[in-house]
Image (cartoon, rainbow, N blue to C red):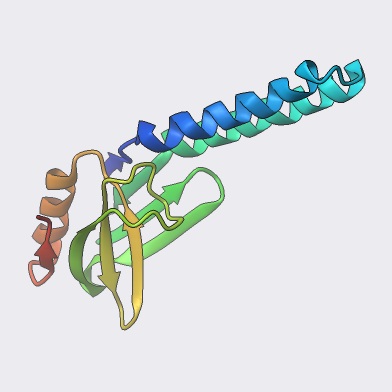
Length: 141
């Protein structure tokens, strides 16, 4: 089984974390009661932990059955048969997807399906897919 980690795009992560920290300190600045402040801090710590988990635990695995297993944190798991992949295209589409960066590729597979991902080693990842399915069209420029 080959595993590829998602590229982490700090252009997404840093603004999200700044927003979370800003929300955390808002009740302190406004002089909210200590109980409300602690509740918000607790919620934001859990939120930040979840965001970091999703960003750093997004992986793409190619298993022995020639399937691509896409895992994004503990919420998103998908399986794509590599033989069904028709094309790979570069994209910067910001749509929600199992990609922790805006430097992304879109895999089109099946009749109408697609998924946007961001492997850190894009060339190695694409080469592994092409070894299994050399008919994949690619536009990575």
